[in-house]
Structures are given as C-alpha cells and as structure tokens.
Length: 388
Ligand SMILES: *Cc1c(COP(=O)(O)O)cnc(C)c1O
Image (cartoon, rainbow, N blue to C red; front, side):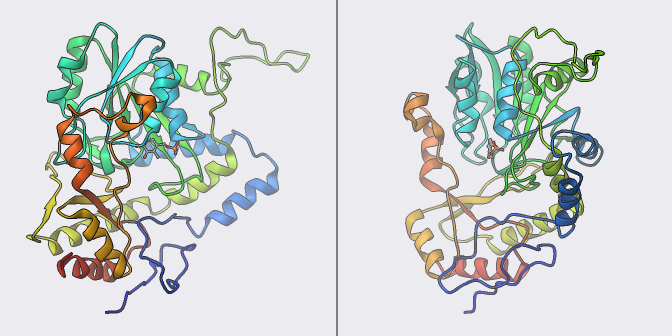
C-alpha cells in the first residue's frame, strides 16, 4: 500500500513528499503563509522587543480563544513559573500534580523551592484523578496543578471544590489545550491561573512563547508587572532625565514575548478555528475507523467538555509490537511522555501510583497535526487494523 503523504493546503513549510524511509510524523509545525510578511515587517521596523504587536496578540487571544487577561510570555515554562511566583508559592510549600505531563510542570515547582507531590491519574484520560488528591493535602499544600493531558480538560469542578475546601490555588497547565472548553467555559477563563505554551509543535506557535492568564484583574496586574523585572510599565513615569521612575519591591523576571514572535503568533491565529475543526474531524475519523480493534482501548471523552486534541492517544496491548508494526509501514507513533515522577529530581518512581504505572505500559499516540490529511488518517487506520 502506498503511504499517501498529501500535504494540507494550510501548511506552507512541511515538505510535500516524504523521503524514502521517513515516517509519517507525529507532529508538524504550523506556519501561516502570511507569517513571513508579518515578521519581515517587524524586522524592517527594527522594533523587535515587546510592543504593540504583543498587545494585539494578547487582545486576539482574549477575543478569539476566550483567555482572560492573557499575558504573552517567552515560554510555557515561564508561564508556569510566574504563576507559582504570583501565587506566592515558595520554600517549604507543596504542590499537588499528576505525573502524566512534561517535566516542565514539576520542574517549575522545584524552581520556586516547593515540593511536587504526585497524585494518581485516571487511566482512561491521563488526567489527575480528583479522588486521589485530598488525602495528599498537608498543612504545606498551597496549590493543585491540573494538566490537561493531550488537550482534554481535567475534572475542573471537582478540583476547584477540593481547592475551595482547603484554601488552595488552582493552576492549569494548559500547554496542550488552547481552544478547549469545560462546561461551556473556555480554558483560560476558569482557574486562578492558566498556563499556555506556544512552542513550535503546539497548536499555536510563536516559535517559542506562552501565555499566563490570571482570573482576577489584580492578580493579572501582578503577572504583567513581574513578567518585566517587577516594574509596573503601565504606571511608572519617565522623568526629565529620561529614566523610568520605579521602586522595585519584589523579584521580577524577563519573561515577556517580543514583537517579532507576536507577529508570527498573530499570523498563526488566522484560521485557528478552521484548523481546530479539521483536527476534530481527523480525531472523529480515527475514532470511527478504530472502533472495536482487538487489543486497543480508547480514552474516554465526556460530553461536558471539548478537547483541543493536541494528541490522539489510546491504550494498546503489546505496545512495542504496535510501534514496530507502524514503523514498518511508515507511520510514527509515540508515548510522548511517561509519568515524570520517575526522575531522581522528583524523588523517583512511585509504586503507589498504580494507574500511572499501568498508563506508562499501555498508552500510545499516533500522528495528529495540521498537515495530516484524511487520506493519511485512513492509511494509518488501515495499518492499525491489520494488527501488530
Ligand atoms: C510544552 C509543554 C510545557 C512547556 O512549554 P514551553 O513553551 O516549551 O516552555 C509545559 N507543560 C506541558 C504539558 C507541555 O507539553
């Protein structure tokens, strides 16, 4: 069977034909055809750093994706770190999170001097299991970090209820879920803090970048101040000497996005909704095509929330054989991330996280990205149905 690599008309940068031996990739980087012109204009202007385009990008994130008070930053990791800082989390504190994520989530907890405490996941989604949170709360616990694995929103109502009962902050790691929603509300408008990533293989890229949404306007002001050294740019006057007048009161960071990156983000926002619709259609095609495949169990999707579908994953028996069978037919597949608790920095693998351990053995993801055509999905479905 031919491996039908048919490029999507949306994508300007993906090579149109696979070289011999190359696999249908897991990810692609989306660069809108208008991006080169937009970024070129910024370069020509020589105003490269944070300016009007960062503001325009934030306004569109808010208007088009429903994010509240988004502050554009230079990475998703910066967003996580700044959220923890603004939440006042530091030495001796504990933060509860699930291990099914990228190391950045727990790394930022360690960066502020706090301790990541791992709760188990739901085997059916990869998301934190609200039922495994409460018994891990101690007098040191300050926050719950909710990672929406693959773009599928966590049980936010249950998580918020636990947080309210114990006076904890909720910080969402929404790196996989721009454009997702939970019970009719956009991800980015729900919890105390929501962190997005605009890294190259995420849905919406600025090359590298991120956004931090704080629900309250007061906290959002803190985020904007502390993303730029801790100086309140909006209300610090410039004196006759030409110097900005301010009194630094606490630690800030150099985490802002720059205008040339915002220009790429603005270009890539064009057609974002259509790209998400196409992504959903590919997922539906996978799900329809892979109904009742022996040895394959789908993740569960509840009707009260909409995933951003960064990944398309499921559980398989004999995973290594599955990966080899797909590779032999020119298709990439990947676990993407194992439970991160196994890292020595985070204390080593926790045997008590039984569902995470099972998930580590059986989860697998197949290609899902903007350059993926319906013909390619049909081919991948066919390959999987031939067995492994
Ligand atoms: C990508 C990612 C991050 C980090 O984002 P960067 O923009 O690369 O810093 C954090 N958490 C998760 C779950 C991610 O996938």
